[in-house]
Each structure stands twice: as structure tokens, then as C-alpha cells.
Length: 183
Image 1 (cartoon, rainbow, N blue to C red):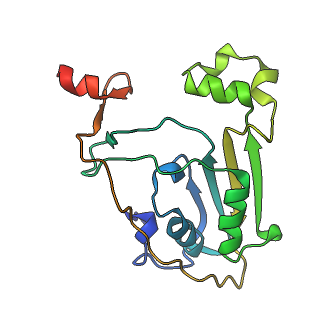
Image 2 (cartoon, rainbow, N blue to C red):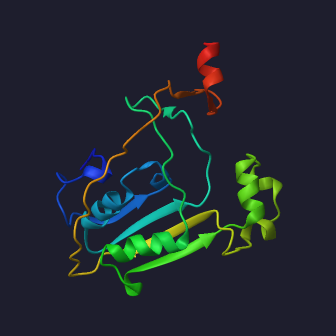
């Protein structure tokens, strides 16, 4: 079954329908992240698993990015482990319901921001974890059998930039206003 929905407004998608839901590399661009997390858990069957990650650092798309969806993509969040813990606990999830793993260190954060490929770093440089300098937080969440969280109040951004968003270069994957102007 194919479902197309805004995860932060997925009221129309039935609850308790999925054994597993994988959500990767989207949390930083979802403005109403609390509602999206609520729906991601709600959609799972009791005992179902949500695998989701949260960026601790990323590029800031100051103009937004036109991905061809009809609305520009904006970066809204960079996360910390304590922030993710608090969001999950606000959804009536306890220590027994989720596991968080952090990955990264200052070097991997800098390499990421400089677009250095992983092959330029040693195995030790890549696998060393510094809890004070995480790059990525990965969560494994198991929906409790009697899960009963309160749905968060929906929120929307009060403002977005009033400029043309950057364009994604179809061949390189790079983005920028300069690409848009050169075409």
C-alpha cells in the first residue's frame, strides 16, 4: 500500500498499520517535528519499530531550496541528544521504548561541512564517538502496546524568506542561487 502524506499532518493515515517505519535525513526540514514524531509512532502497530535519525549539524539553506515539490525546503532544526530525549519522553515513551546512538566527533563534523568524502578519513577517525561533538543521532523506537500519547498542538512557521529559493543542480547535486542565474 502506498501512502503519500505530510508526516506532520498525517491525521488521515490510519493508526496501528505498520510493523516498521524508516525515516532518514528528513527531521531537520520538518518544521512541526513534534507532530511528525507523534504520527510516526501512531502509524506503527503495537511493538512496531521506528528507525529515525536527527542531524546535529548541517548546511543552512538561507534561501530555501526548490526540490521541485511546489514548496521550498527550509532547514529548521539541528538536534542535540537531550532535545531528542525530551521530544520522545513528551510522546509518553520511556527508557524501555527507545534507544539513541550518537555518531561523530569534531573531525567528522568538520569533514561533513567541508564536503570531504569518508574515504579521506581513517577508520579510527570515522568511528570515534565524542558525545560532546555528535554529527548524527540515530533512534530505534518501539511502540508500546498501550501507547497513549497526547497529540501535540499543530504549529506552522510564522515566517519564511521572501526570496527565490536556490535550485538543485541536476547533474552535481549542488545547490545555489548562482546555478539558477546561469541557466
